[in-house]
Image 1 (spheres, each protein chain N blue to C red):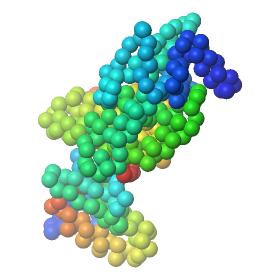
Image 2 (cartoon, chains in turn yellow, cyan; image 1 turned 90 degrees about the vertical axis):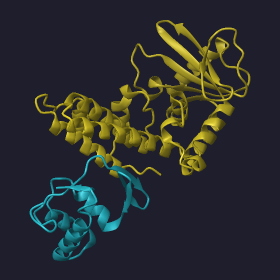
Image 3 (cartoon, each protein chain N blue to C red; image 1 turned 45 degrees about the horizontal axis):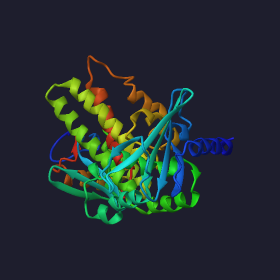
Image 4 (cartoon, rainbow over the protein chains, first blue to last red; image 1 turned 90 degrees about the horizontal axis):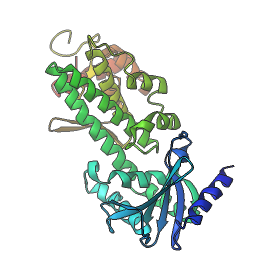
Amino acid sequence: MQENESGQWLRVLRDRGLIPGDTLAVSLVGSVAHGWHNERSDYDFYVVTEREPEFADGSSITMPLNPPRVRSQSFYLGERRWEVTYWLDGHYDQMLAKVSRDEYNRGVAPARVLAAREELALGRLDSCVILAGEPWFEARRAQVAGSAFRSFMIARSLGASDNCVEDALGQMKSGNLESATLSARAALGSSVDALLEGLGQFGSQAPKWRPQRFRAARPDALSFEDYWALETMRDYDPEDPRPWINQVLTICQDIAMRVEVS
Amino acid sequence: MSGLPGPGPLDVPRRTLGIRIRRVPDGLLLGYRDQAMLLDGPAELIYRLADGARTVTDIADGVAEEYGIDRAEALADVLEFLGDHDDSGIFQW
């Protein structure tokens, strides 16, 4: 079934002239690739080429790369929107260079090492459905595994959590319990992201998929039921938020002790 | 704490919230204010067990079980460690 669908997707793209001659790899990415989609979900594809494709129409998305953009094409087939993003093979070289072991050991700040779309692109190498170019994916996946991508992502998320924990503690001390509640929620999200990134579930830029990523990762450090009770603030008492806030900050601390950064 | 000069067996320490913690291959790296501290081995275990629910005696039992040592010896070690770090700010009581 998967094989048939893959062939059909690729044929649609080819028939519309959306697969350039120098294409190295084609993949389905996003919610459909994970099986998390619904009837309104887009079909998202990545096409990797050697040179920038030349389309008369379409759009460009600015990227901190050289050339500083990725091009995209979109269309509707029935009720379904299809979007194709064109990455250059050289873009992947540049993204991998940004998250190399040398860069990590040099102490490059993890918060801004990759733009959100770059992070998605590297994270999706493992989770995509390959439509063409299997050897290209094998090689790139090996390069990501040998890079500090995972370390950078975990350090980024733990750092974000630390900042929110610090905010929450300060706000709680000053009696600003509403802001402390929001800071604790943000800390929890970042800590859980770090936990999931430690298990290879990337995609923290899209919090809406956190429950699905959590179920896929099945971390030992925290059950889904306990996580979901916190995420949905089940035990939160508006009259006395401090116990809930402290519980959340403690869970964040527990996660930091469990996730190995490097 | 229950009394001076240091922690007692029935005191309940907990890791101070807001300390930056990173798990590294050698143990736990703590960052607090401008201080950095690497905890490994029994020190790491004591820190992990100081969850605000366990007494010092409970923590010592955990250390005794993990390292196969006498409970009294473990309690003495835990009390010494906590006493040594009483002013470090990494524990609350």
